[in-house]
Length: 49
Image (cartoon, rainbow, N blue to C red; front, top):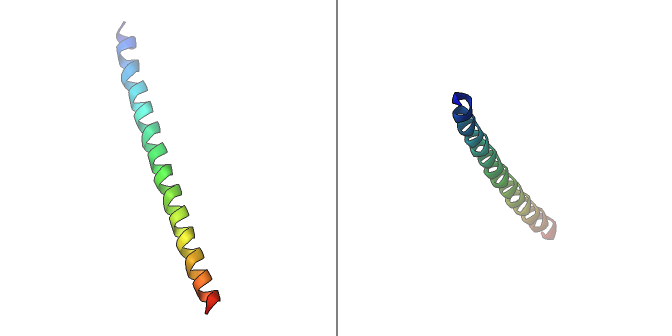
């Protein structure tokens, strides 16, 4: 009975960390795409000159 009460908190913590890492990866991927777009823009601007 005591063991059952400790597992939900661990499970909630696991879900919390999973959601946090998911959000972190989403931000990283967004930053990467944004950065690549800027680099592409700069490169196209340089080649146009």
